[in-house]
Amino acid sequence: MTYKAIATAVLALSAQSTATVLDLSGNDWTLQNLPLNISVSASLPSQAHLDLYAAQVIGDPYFGLNDFNLRWVAESNWTYVSSPLEELDSSDKTQTWLLFNGLDTFTSIEFCGRHVAATNNQFRQYYFDVSDSLTDCPSPILSINFGSAPLIADAIAAEPEQETWPYSVEIAYEFLNRQFIRKEQSDFGWDWGPAFAPAGPWQPAYIIQLGSDDTSSEVFVRNADLDISRLGQLNNLPPDQGAPWLLNASLDVLGSIPSGAGLQYVVTESVTNRTVSCGSMMNVTLTADAVTGTAILDPSTYELWWPRGLGPQSLYNITVKLQDIKNRTVASVNRRMGFRTIVSSSLVM
Image 1 (cartoon, rainbow, N blue to C red):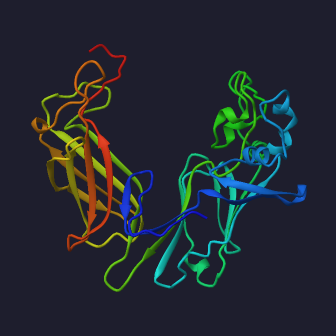
Image 2 (cartoon, rainbow, N blue to C red):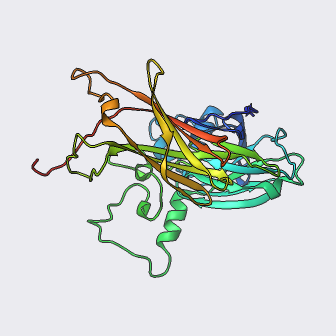
């Protein structure tokens, strides 16, 4: 398993913290269907069709009539099993989280032989605290069982007093009842497209470990959103182009946000790395697992971003730091952004 035992964890969302991150991506997985006597090497991210094809259990799903011949894959359950995750810290001062950026779609998750949770939405990020499971587990293994989406959709549709629609509204695709589940709708067939209804961990997954002591605890940013608009701007209406810029920041975290924590921002030019502005964010709001804040930026300080051929494409690096009451940075996020308002509206302007 690809193990990243680093003091600062950097994921695709350009977030930094003092957490230790185990990246579960790689080839050290096994795909199983024990009733069908199938057990093959697998990867993450992936889907059952891809790993079965790589292991030559099935032919090319796009060849000939395999869209129909391989329907048994979509109508079966598949389990992804990790290799032993022996690098993990099982001490009682360590908090351990499973973080899944995308599971397609219906799963039952086990860690250290214990049921953790079930999921039913392809488009959600899921995270689970598994600290208790790890305390007496010398050789941790993660198992993710994926149920058949077409069969589960049929079962939901067959529930007593379930809602129905006329045919003109509920168009029948190759697999029926797609509207009952939170899964990519084209997976059930779409015009000329095949109906594979795949199952598997289609996005990266991680194990996050957070340490703590008597004075502080670590924090990991699992999601971050930085948004720039003109002060007073409303959707679908042209803003005042002379108004200050409004920077909104929202951080979703794992771990305990320190009491009295605040947000600091730094804006630098992307090319020269020159600091343009910095300071404390206002209106900071703390919840158990999120922190938000705003900052007003002087419009005369920033060059506008222009589409290619219409002007310079000025970009800036914006860093937002989560700091404790002693001004120690416990986590940060970074985005490369441009300053520009774009209005898309059918209204007359």
